[in-house]
Image 1 (cartoon, rainbow, N blue to C red):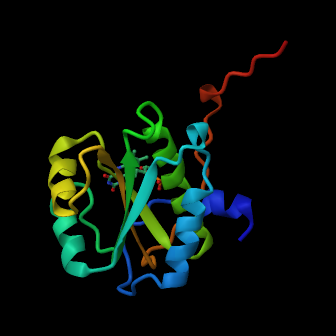
Image 2: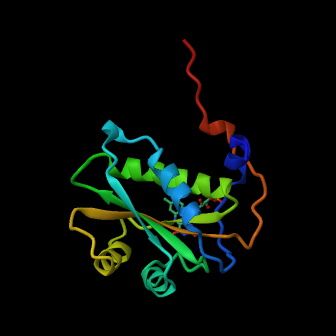
Length: 165
Ligand SMILES: Cc1cc2nc3c(=O)[nH]c(=O)nc-3n(C[C@H](O)[C@H](O)[C@H](O)COP(=O)(O)O)c2cc1C
């Protein structure tokens, strides 16, 4: 897909078909995530891909705005000790790259908020046995879309200031 089409076609998908992601799709998504920019190139992240339905339902049960029927999920995990000030920025860049690559592959995804909501993060951290210094930055629900996201734009002139000379 052309880059411009990927940008405009990406949209939060909240209805999915049941098929799981293939290993090759996961590989492409993970490569896209790690192609993102990273402060001091520290890459303070790792990714947990959940294909098991039971575990996914357990995770989703702690996340009030993630009750969609996606067959899979990717958790973006930040290492706060490796990059104490910039881990969140790096995880955000990785998350967006995953969403864009999902669109490019014909998949659908939605970014669901985790950090800084302790009531969502703490039980999932325990369930996945994360290290104390690890934080769950985002939960990305992902799969084959069962709803159409048309090409859109969100452009608002008033949000742009151009400073010349
Ligand atoms: C930080 C962040 C947290 C979000 N959390 C949720 C969420 O918990 N549940 C959800 O359905 N959508 C969530 N979204 C998706 C937004 O609702 C969505 O991006 C926004 O409405 C714009 O729509 P679009 O993604 O289709 O362009 C989140 C997006 C961001 C960037």
